[in-house]
Image (cartoon, rainbow over all chains, first blue to last red; front, side, top):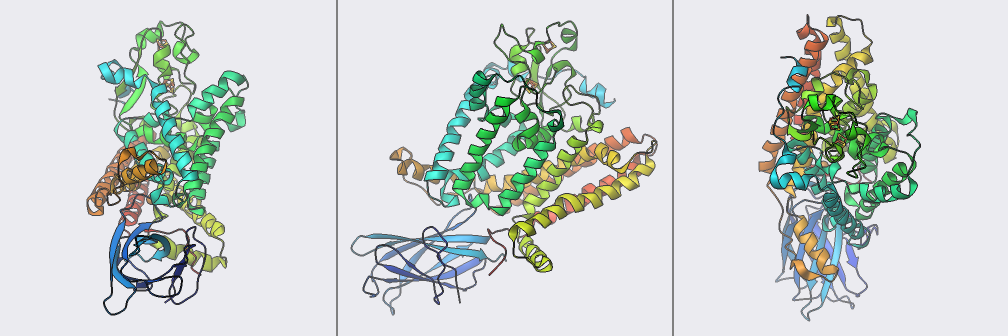
Length: 128
Length: 475
Ligand code: SF4
Ligand code: SF4
Ligand SMILES: [Cu+2]
């Protein structure tokens, strides 16, 4: 259930039921991984976007790039698609190709053209 | 044909005489300058660029490309990276002012300082997860530059290369299986040479003599040779060549070589060879999945959560306890077949070099894996770095590029390991024949078993799922 999240420079530990990554732009991004103890293989990634007033943000374009903390590994990409039933919820599939420490880079483009970037650390992805 | 006859046989082709290649090889400063430029880019990007290892040139190029290319050139050519070593440029500059005359302290000669630093680097690499930290990687590069300049500013000769530099010691050991060697072309010319400029230098040509103290007519193999080719520039008779030879042959050769002496008299050289070989397994173990379970078990058994302590114990097990048991056992069994009554350590010193090719195989498999699977990953990172620096000359970053698939790389890894093991078995046989001409098989078998056991553990390691973690003690 609990994932370790950290902001840009890593090390801010949160303890909500899903990691929330806030930035100076007043927007918040909530990540959820399934399986929530990440392991090598395909992983469902859910991201919720909220604006400064706590309202879900619709119509964003979200791309996630997963990298290992060791250089030289091929990154994994996921395009997230907004859910029809739940506005502001974006879902996609990311492949963890190797065990170890990963971090995800989220690039979210707002309908009005703003770009928001967030980083989520995913330490200790289990080897198969 | 005995070993020494083999080494004294007809010289092969001289690469220095080849039209373009020869003059390129002799332009050490050009290569050093190029490497210096690359180092500066890495240092700057490591300190100022994104602190994400796969997005930073410092971590990427040092831990993926440099290490991989280093072992590849050692296997395919020779100690080219020492020849092109960028640390030498500031060091030579400082030397112009300090002109040291003091000799490196006797107690620190030999390989012990280099061995200690080599283990220290392996340890800090694991403890501080250097592979994951761009600024720490840049700091390591800066410290190398500083240490090289500081040591050689105070002492004459090249003590940094010969005794201190951990990369240099790694290269010296691995270059014993390189296919190229710097040597005198014709021993007759050397016999009538009075100046010995290859060792003493040639002021007329403004060429230094060999800074690591190798006198060409008495040089045996690649140990301590940085491929700098000072000797080739200095020799007034142009009697120095870069030529082909049988890789690994020098490991069976126990003649006394200039600047090195006899292998069988050099406990420190044997120590280096062993740390090199067992360190290869340790470094590979650090990135496979079982190491975390092992470390957690160790932490629980010791009742500690200190990573430094757990790593220390792990290093002790792999670099001290395991070699002591394996090598001590092999030495005890094999010495019964030797004609002279020798101490256990003396026997180990004689046979230790036979394990070097296996060690090279493990390093090559491991670093080859990183190089091949991440071959092109530097392209988008360089593109991004150029764009960030306001020079979008390299185009839009193409983040998807990687390298070869793991499925293709794994057979290559196993091939390198197999090759190293076979060469080790051959070298060990040749050492056994030299040490126990009458009971060769009995002297050989314990060592062959050690080599095969190490090979089996490496096969197991390389087939484990990779798991590269910064911390192993879960909260
Ligand atoms: S200077 Fe040249 S000829 Fe003289 S000993 Fe050295 S390599 Fe031989
Ligand atoms: S023998 Fe000495 S001078 Fe010649 S290439 Fe080797 S290290 Fe340089
Ligand atoms: Cu590795």
